[in-house]
Image 1 (cartoon, helix red, strand yellow):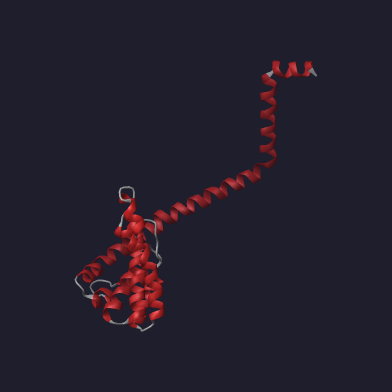
Image 2 (tube, one colour):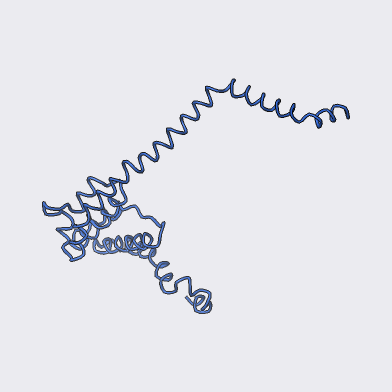
Length: 196
């Protein structure tokens, strides 16, 4: 056995040739399967990036451009114009119809809910506010999600469904406590934090 061990340590080229031969044999035996797997990976990755940059990206830009005037009308409290448009520009409802699958279309749902709430159409406001898909990826999105919950509570209160209104207000309480004391002060004032 020592002679066999010595011969293996003396000829590293033989070990390398043997390994190369095994790899070549594996490729020759499974070449078609490996090629199919490679093609599937390229198609999936190419399809993802193609959709993201050639379809989804331009749609999001068009939706943002379409919402621009509606957002300006919303800012000056022209809720009916912001919601429906006036023929020269699209309102939030048209953005939802055309680009509802984009992030901007989702944001248009939130705006439409607020417009209906301000116009006194509480059930429609509630429908659009519920359709809004809340995200908490960043602080502005989390604040918007909290605002959406509060607005749903307002709509329920206007519809005299007080149990649901209270339920939605409980979603806001942790955010209010968070906003009273931002995290950067939690190390400086630990006693005040425990008092909350």
